[in-house]
Length: 262
Image (cartoon, rainbow, N blue to C red; front, side, top):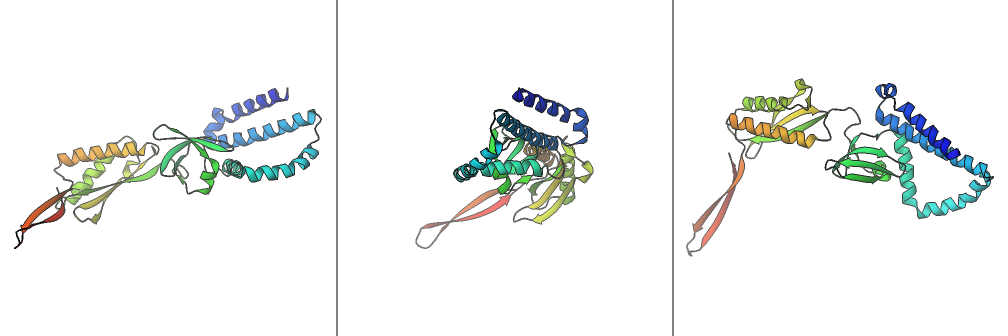
């Protein structure tokens, strides 16, 4: 009976928390973390009530299990570390369900935060199970922590002699054509450096499609390439010149000269 009541209470709380009224006022990730904490607390109380119903004295159990917990803790140190990290994640709220994280050079979206592990899915649609201690102890980039949109950059070089103003105009127009670019007025194209064999430019733009940003960048690069062709703007590429010189002994010596040509 206690188990059924526990399941019913958890279900009712879940329905109440995730009603449209609450979801419109609070972040869904925060609601999920709050629900997880409540769910674990209710389960703990339920177990304690079942033990009490069976006539087990809780103070005796706790006192007798203290030494056992120390021994188990030493043997399962990593597991307890993940468990504590899960509690920290749920209470702290720095990582929430739906956040886009970059961990170990892999970008992933958090689908669930558990007490021991968290579940995420990366850009290749592969499910990743992450021990919570990796999130709390390693350097993690949270692309969703401050706001939904993030600024991204595409760098490109053009041949010397290109019209700088025309290049900047074309880069801005290329970004404007993509549907996933937010705040069109904030698009910036700037001339950043004199490269060894190219004039280097940066295209900066905001997008809220953080998880699929590499696809967005790919689309914009294709637009840039098409517009460069239409406006006779060339991108330099490497070529190697080889020269054979004969010395007095009759042997040929090879010399190379690596340059970038439009």
